[in-house]
Length: 281
Ligand SMILES: O=c1ccn([C@@H]2O[C@H](COP(=O)(O)O)[C@@H](O)[C@H]2O)c(=O)[nH]1
Image (cartoon, rainbow, N blue to C red; front, side, top):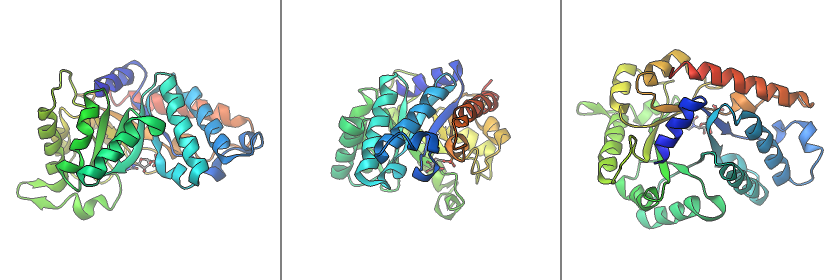
């Protein structure tokens, strides 16, 4: 199943999940000068970032907002980037954070697990409950997966996710629900196709978080630009080796305008993967 495959790649290469949050005005001139259309510029930049990081990365995460912000041109690039990553037999996460009533969720599932915007895994919001998640289940049987927002990396995660409901916090309730839903799927592998997004930035009790996330495969954002500590990430996943760490701006933002950007991408990919390998080995 898909989460076992990510784990395999993380152990083989590193738990670096390359975040492709590409912003138009940060694309090196070295690239933009060769194209007229925004879609071609975005794709060309993504291709460089993918090709350079491939030997170090467990998977890729493409943030749909970056492409939606550029309209149809951006969405063409989003589609091209997803299919390029899939054509390389690499794993791609569509960071779309969907969550809506069942009938609508079914359409989102079709839209992001088949056709022009097909990814291997999507990110989902659990706020609307099980019927907003279950329409994705039939795609899990075909090898797809989802990372459901558990404890997010932003400061605002404290507003609702840390609220207590009896003996647990709201995010712990979500993580326990993920385990419950996973049991309903006929999972023959170590990890269920339902994983969780868990950031350590605002996590107060890492020991508890580690306990609750045991048995769930994790997508961990917040390292790099958001300042999550590598020690905390290590504490969370070292024993169970159950997570990949997303770095977006820390890999692709603020590069040189000249052809030096390729050297910089390579150095960053090497450094990040080396740092992150220490979280699981
Ligand atoms: O809790 C969350 C959930 C998702 N994200 C997303 O991850 C990347 C992080 O980008 P960086 O540049 O590495 O900070 C971005 O796409 C977010 O939307 C998150 O940060 N936290």
